Length: 236
Image: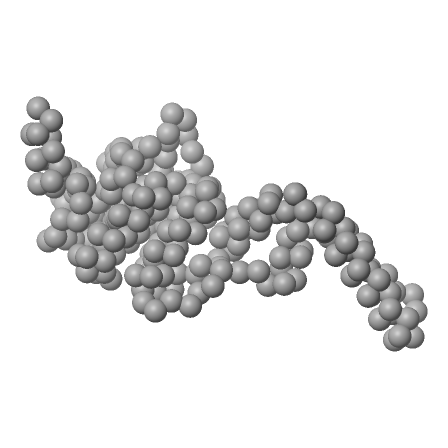
């Protein structure tokens, strides 16, 4: 998988299980990145190109988190993916669904008769989505801390199966070194590529990541962690 934005000079190839860091020291470049990534994840057009043998639709396979505190695990996008996944599983229970519909219609008829109100009708055709919404099927959002919430979010993305790239902003500010390493390890285990976008380069190194730095003069610098360099030397 590769993320490219020619206007910003971004060309980041992802290796499975390895996080990548993009440091945008230039404020205008950072603002442009946030604006365009946010728009494209919402389905709008922009200068980002995401590919894996062929071009991928960013709004379908990428999630962009501006910060973790207001992360909505029951957002419209996640609920759409969740209900589709549940609906696919429900295809094996069509007989049971028919019984639920039949019993519901019978109950509604009884309510109509008891009310004495005439000239009423109802829609006898309902989808799995209608049932999920009626029963308010959603993801549990009770978490002890922010790290637990992020780990659960990664697991949700993996369960839903469509998201292969997670882009997060300034996470080195919100999580300490050990917490970020745990997030990275979980993303690696779940096979979700993760791009950390930062305003300033973190002092700590978290894994065998590469760092793509666009400095204040818009010069591009690529740095590798000592872990990655040691592995490279061992392989020679």
